[in-house]
Picture 1 (spheres, rainbow, N blue to C red):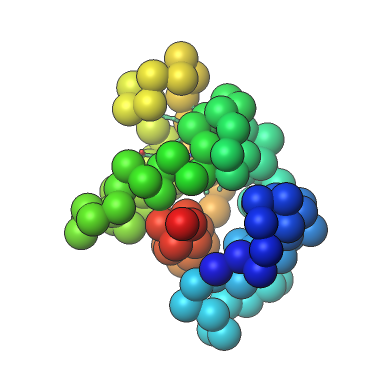
Picture 2: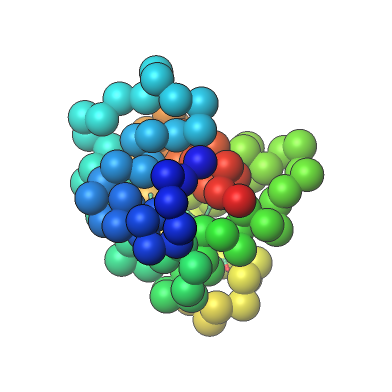
Length: 111
Ligand code: HEC
């Protein structure tokens, strides 16, 4: 969970804090993940559509989908197009499967 309102949450993202502070907590490393976070933020924001859909909308769409983590991981690792009607596509991201899983959990944990 975020410590405060949306502003704090977004600030947390900008500082590189929130992805690392995944809902499951402790076991998450901080090394190496920041660079890919920067990449994500070029196209995604928490609440607004940039190139890609807002992370919050992704969380809402996949809530209750038991395959959500697997689907989001696949999209991040292999790229995605045509699901969100943004007129853009997501290229495969140069992240590890472990990072993709971490991002998936983080996104799905957004309330
Ligand atoms: C070049 C721009 C770009 C970058 C960089 C990017 N995305 Fe995306 N992302 C998109 C677009 C566009 C979509 C919508 C694709 C579609 O319509 O299927 C998307 C969709 C997604 C989805 C939803 C996939 C689905 O199956 O519904 C997730 C999750 C996601 N991005 C996470 C990330 C993460 C995490 C990163 C960083 C590691 C990242 N994205 C980097 C543009 C980007």
